[in-house]
Image (tube, rainbow, N blue to C red; front, side, top):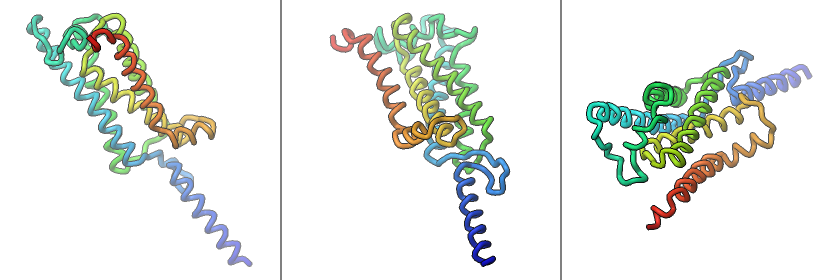
Length: 223
């Protein structure tokens, strides 16, 4: 009888340990933090690199533009796809310095977090909430720049579009990760839906941006 009870307790303890490990907690009750899948880590690395590459190229072009006001960036292809028009706008330095400098400082952090996840690192809840806040600011700032590009500057920068795409992907999947792991409280149905259809928010989001770009310059694209 005692042996059977002990066996059940051992099995229950092992089961609880597996469940705790799946949640990112230490089986013995300590807070070991939350990890992530290799796919999630790779996505952070790739999306971070997309933003970093865009920020780096735009920064180099900004320097060239300072030296030579007549300089035309290579991505200025036509009146609509005109990186030079975007770089010369007031919105390109909204904080008093070129916007790409923000990307040079922040996208490497995302890449480092992704590399850490690929290496098996686990981060505390506060760390994930910090990343959530950072990506929320990033996607919010990118959304504002999108509106400015479409309806005020009246031009697009291809490198900016690359940064917008990377930032949107990282925000969506950081949110999915945090909701799935209960770092952000959410109803069970929402956790289940995000787990099953995690691809839908970024697809709809980026598709919506594409439709806005298409309709904004419909006459130009079809002429």
